[in-house]
Image 1 (cartoon, one colour):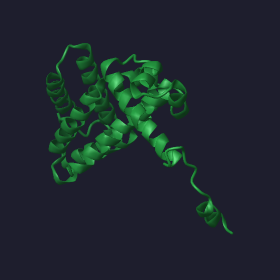
Image 2: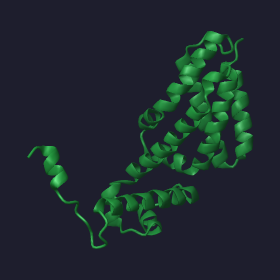
Image 3: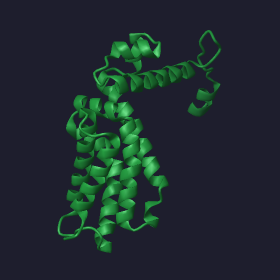
Image 4: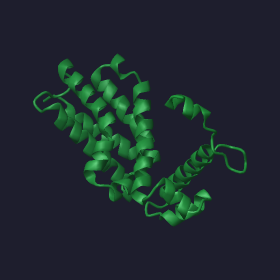
Length: 205
């Protein structure tokens, strides 16, 4: 019997409910992530004990799936950024001039980031800065492609390299989020300031 046949012949381990144990684990993970998102939205300093209680699981179960607060925040950040990447991809930015596409990207990204602002703020505090940047790699690659296209179209400045303009846009987005978190801006004010500042930063002289 080959390895595939042995795997198919091995019965799935089941709990007392008759459901595969993997399904129980997936339900626990979903409950933990939902509870963690809610806890961090209320308090960026939320503890693992608070999250376990909100999820209705024991701390042993929580740590079995997420061995640290950093691991849990990393997964929440990844989920939020995957949603941003998917939303941006659905905008079909290639069909618009680069300057219009950049405005669309900022607006669609901002609404999702604003919804997860406190969680992302907690993640940025808990995780190393280089790890946070690495987790943004996909969306930053999209921004760089867009800026490079804008430079080719003549609507974005070409006297500075695209990677520097990407870094500038990324930094401005983080700054806008910090302004909302500190109460200096409403979400709408932050988005308006972000759009105006990014447009000024990338506009040709």
